[in-house]
Length: 330
Ligand SMILES: Nc1ncnc2c1ncn2[C@@H]1O[C@H](COP(=O)(O)OP(=O)(O)OP(=O)(O)O)[C@@H](O)[C@H]1O
Ligand code: SF4
Ligand SMILES: [Mg+2]
Image 1 (cartoon, rainbow, N blue to C red):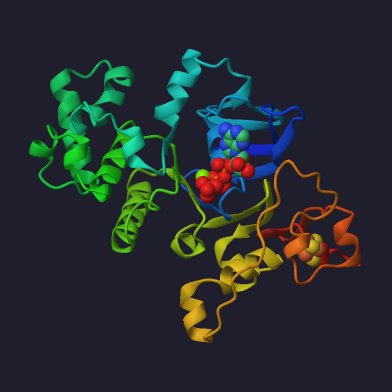
Image 2: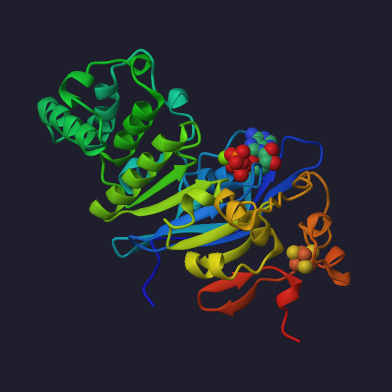
């Protein structure tokens, strides 16, 4: 089988901002192939953003990779990302040219004092020095059109506060894509937007990923927005992947009780069944030491050993994995 573009192997992340360090990610594994659309879904606080930030080695102060590997396979080379020195020329090239990221809240990442067109052009100033300023500007305008910004020529000179939330998110997408990255990480790209604009932005991301032959890692707490848009889905709970595989298989035959609860809580299914089944309880505090399955307190299917022994990863078939004792071979 061909190599993936990016592979995360047994990644553990700890928070050291406490008298006793505690894990925030516990043995994450993830693979993204070239051109593949991959989703991570899980409720707020389960570790989705930290997974994304660890890929780009931009974790917050006090949060460290304890063990594991993040490997990039690119142009016949195999690069172990977090063994590269921070701020090395390799990182400068990887961030933006190979892997790019768009963040949840556009206003935070746009400079209020600079015209949006200039901000879209900025990555070209650092990474594409062979282009003249005029060529860089033309490319920025071309990308503004690609992401559906109206009247790009005049919008180029406008400031972020003059744009709507959806337009600002399109500006961020143009900034992230202007260097044609191989992988775009989109962390909750539509959460700050209203529902109709959410659907448009999502459609845009999918069509651009196809047009630019780019892999997409789409992160969200909302299963309904990615259910039918990603090829492969990872379901995350309390810093672990608890079920993963082909999206279609996971949605048709969810195995982990957590994924079943997420599906039962989807509004469209709720209307059909006329039953609302919200998941009771909350995620465990990451400082809490858990011996067995982290989902145990909320699980309606728990077995005797679930409290004491963590479930292993169980392969159901090539396209479907789950971490739950119910699927252990007898
Ligand atoms: N800078 C930090 N210091 C300490 N703990 C942190 C820090 N950032 C995140 N965490 C903790 O790490 C865990 C995972 O956080 P993360 O931001 O990855 O969650 P998330 O799944 O992206 O949630 P959301 O859907 O709300 O964005 C949470 O328990 C959070 O409180
Ligand atoms: S391992 Fe046990 S507690 Fe955990 S999800 Fe499966 S049945 Fe529930
Ligand atoms: Mg997040």
